[in-house]
Length: 373
Image (cartoon, rainbow, N blue to C red; front, side, top):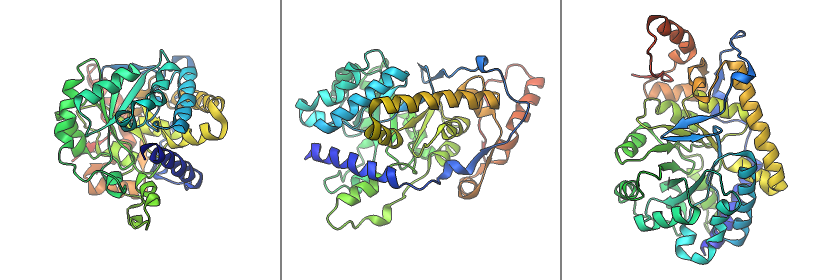
C-alpha cells in the first residue's frame, strides 16, 4: 500500500507541475534597480553558511520520494544530478523503509550515487529516536529533515489523526540524534509561521524550511486519491514561501525557502527575503521525468550560473548579501504583511540605511529584512 501511495504521489505531483499557473507570490517581490550597484563576477561566491553548515551553493534538491521501484529509479537520477552539480539533496519520507526494509535501496541510492555529497534523510514527526538514527545511518546523512504535514495527513484517507505528540517528539529527536546531525524541520507545501519557527527553535531544531504554498499541493494530491474528492476546498491552503520569509525575519534560527520556486530569479528573491538557501522539488521532478539526469544537470548548472549573474548585477558578493538589497513588496503579499504587522517600507531602502549605518559604526553585526512592529 505504501509503495502504491508513493507512486500515486509522483504521478499526481507531475500532473500538477504540468498544469501550474505561471503566477505566484514570488512575482509580488521585485528589486529596486540601482544601475551602479554591480560588482565583478569574480568577486561573487555562491557559498552559503548557516546553522553550523557550509554548502557550496544556495540551492538544493528538496524532499521528493522513495519507497517503490519506480521512485527508487527517480531517486537515482536525482542523486546523479546532485553529484554532478554539487547541490545538496534530501530524500522523501522514509516511512516506507521503516515499514519494509526491502525498499532500503530506493533511499540509500542517494548516497551510493552521490558518495561525497550533502545528503539529508527525511522522517515524519511521529518517528521514534531509534527510527531517526536508522534513517541517518542508512544514508550516512549529513542532516535530518523532519516534515510537518498536518493538512496532508488530514486529507489522506489513511493519514494520521493525532497531532499533539509532534512537538514533544521533535524535541526528543533533536536531542537524540546528537549534535553532529543538524535537524531541519520543514513543511510540505503549506508554510511555517513565525510562531511555529519560534517553537521549533525552543525544541532544539537547528534550521527551519518554510516550504510554502505555490508548488506541489499535497492537499490536492491526497484529495485526488479520495473516492469522493470531498476536500477540494482545501486546495491552496497555507502561506507562500515569500510570506513565510517575511513573517520569520527575526527568527532565532536560520530559515530555508522552498515551495513554488520556478526559476533563478525566484531563488534570488528567496535569498533576498532572508533564506539561507532555496530548495526545489516539483520543478526538478518534472525535468528528471521528462529528460533524465542529464536534463536536470543542465537545468541546475544553468540556474546556478544565472543566480551568480544576478548576484553580480545586484552587488551581492555572497547569498547573504542579497538580504541587504532593496526590494518592493506588492499585491496580496503586501496585504499579508500589513495584517501580520510587518513594515515593508524599510525593505525598499535598506541598502541606503546600511550605508549610513556603516558610516556611524563599523561593527554592525547583522541586518534584518524588515521590521515586525
